[in-house]
Length: 368
View 1: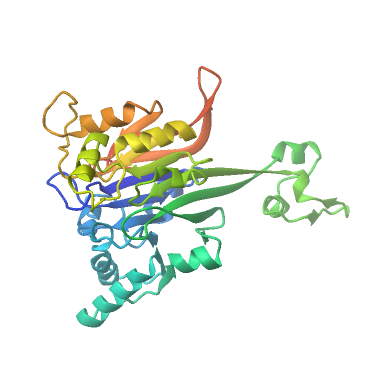
View 2 (view 1 turned 90 degrees about the vertical axis):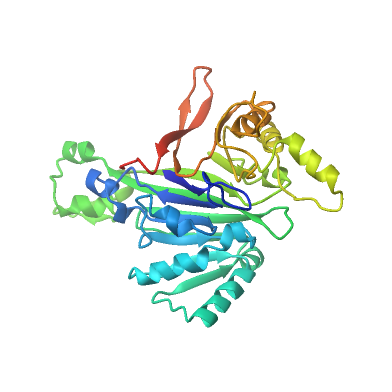
């Protein structure tokens, strides 16, 4: 299960209602016991992009920099990375000592080197920098991160189309669980003992009679997979066609409506912002069969209220633009909005299956 908290949803510059881009993804394990599952210390999280002011946004949430496992930067534009040095500096000042993985374009390493040199910034923890260019060339575009004995993340990278190299991240959480068939053991006259624990751990054991008990005969194994795609700035949604095939959710920028994007491109043919309209993303999602779509990264011209009849550009126009071509589940992200993606397919009234994405409300008032 993955819980998304949008920390910034504005494109280019912040507004009074929206900060620039950042998204936190918590990794929840539904198989943990109640107290452990609810403990923030057992909920590692990732940060996708880190626009200026991201660390200030985090102060309004329950997220701690001590549980931050990895940071992924989609591209080098400032509204996606200017907050990174400050956030890392705050992590250092808060006493963090655990290593941190940073997946980003090579230029981000140069940015951090410059800030470190000129401001005497010191990290008391290791920053494992992984250049996206190298990952694509050497590791087939994939990175595996082990969170604990049950959870593993795989991060795959898809090159996108923007004014600078930009990337999309596929985040796949796999949770493994072994369930011991205690009824079978009792029925065979094998009393509860330390042997039960070894069987559940996958070990074959011998009982007093000398008989071998094979773990595979008494343990049921299952996996829960949850997958989300988080796209950086991109004017060609179809580049994500392979990545979204088995995804539970797509998060994609929708900087403009189709009408506004066309006007911008016509006004200055020599400059293309190379962003997507809500309609472009919606059409792609509809054609490829994406069931759940969250749009974000909205131009500052769009006000936060939702009224498609208003002459003032607002979220209603973005929603209408996407809904004109997309019939799936659609949300327009707002700062601090939280969503739970559980990766479990449910059967609909029509007999089809659909992965659940639940809107949880605002992180500002959410006491989870």
